[in-house]
Image (cartoon, rainbow, N blue to C red):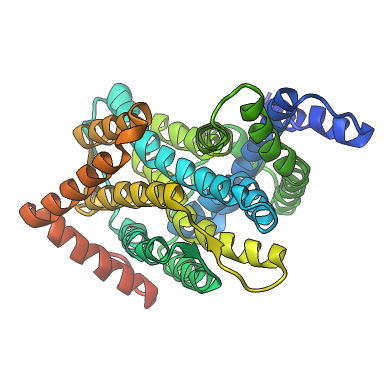
Length: 395
């Protein structure tokens, strides 16, 4: 039945909704499971709704919106931590943990997964990236380089909010000026897309509202229950928030990317994850300081301590290498294996973050210094970005 996935995903949010309505307060681990499942179900609904809504806009813009909507659960959890940080400074570290964990999961496991599945399914050892994806590459490089500012300052400020949000707006404008393409949807999104336009639009709005409410009532207890569960079982709360929470909130766009790979569009699948990385590395990071200031009651910087600074440095170094890999508009199986290996290394050897970060930077510099194709690729990406921003075609 084409509507069964919607019923299943919608039903995943019901147990926690019932607990909320009845005022039931389970133990922290139970709350973490119920709210995590609720966020996961809502996230899938958001992804399918956004896919169905992309039929009348350029592919680049549609994918950027899909990526943004798919990570709304991540925004909700991170915003919760940033809000609480104004009164409890320890929550500032949780906000950074959740953001850096989500970013590194997308690049370190998501990107390699796409090229790996493409090889297993079609025996293709590389993904040819569309030229107009130079927009994502360019903005991601700018956001990565700017990350040095809050890291050196030791705080995220409202000024950073302005810069990052401006980057994201410019990215959306450039993406929206690309060429429209025929959209081929499969699975749950196809069922929604096959409806008449009025019914489809009404259905998309209904899904957005339902998912938003589900996320709204689950985000805070999900975030808080993870911290409490870590304390109860003697687990480092920082690590729990950094890796467990993003597994739930990042899963929708990864699933969407996998579906695209299996229907022969690995480049679109990769683009979904790259776009998710762009909006997390711009809009998500930028909104943390704004949420913190609103909660604080006045414009105030959200502090970044030594551990958070190390996490941001490692995330920025990984992002820099990811950009260098994509600059020549191809992504190979070997590059994916290297990204996955470095990611697993930083997880297993938690005390070697500095060394792994240096490795990322060294590889990035090496690519730029010794690969003419990489240097030419960067130049081509920025030309494409400028052309699309000005309203021209990408080719």
